[in-house]
Length: 270
Image (cartoon, rainbow, N blue to C red; front, side, top):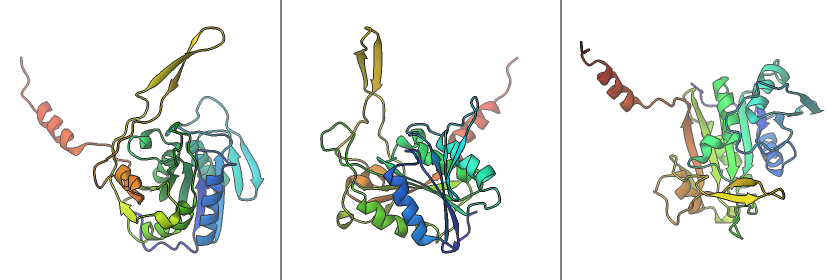
């Protein structure tokens, strides 16, 4: 159990992400962390790891590049970064809290299963360290999904969210997933505690031909809707609110487990 109240001021915070060591979102989260805690470390991927999920590098060597005494880059996934940070780089100075992000684009609905941002928080949770993942929705002006980022909502609300979520107890297998809406800070409609919504990625597959005439494929953008169910992360973001979703690492579905137990208790046929 993560016990509250958490001594945030005297905490040692590890900041990581999946977009890479040189991204603006990481720098903004690092700045937020430095305003809240006395000691902040950064261990992040050398290159973008979007969509890496909770993958671990097992078949090739990992290398750590030291940038400063408290900033490091790793040629691996977000999971690798957290694992190396806790078990090697910060072995003698174990972090009290892990912050992952701020991801460029939101991680809501099924995005969570693909997200390297959330995977970094998952790895911290598995290592017994409380973790919060942060993502910033983008303004999709041209419909391409690339979008532009308005960072002011994340910058203004991230400290408030960190203080609030560390003021309550969490089970040890829970992490917190936070998404900021694509609006300026003065347009944010509030902070909502939400559940996971549904929005499938990858149903659209676009085929093309390379210069040699061979086929290649692009996985298309997410399906969107004008209306999502109330209480979901998707609905909160859509109406300009900050979404805070507690996620459990226990994937067991209890009701089906009970049904299966009953099924396997049936009499054997001879």
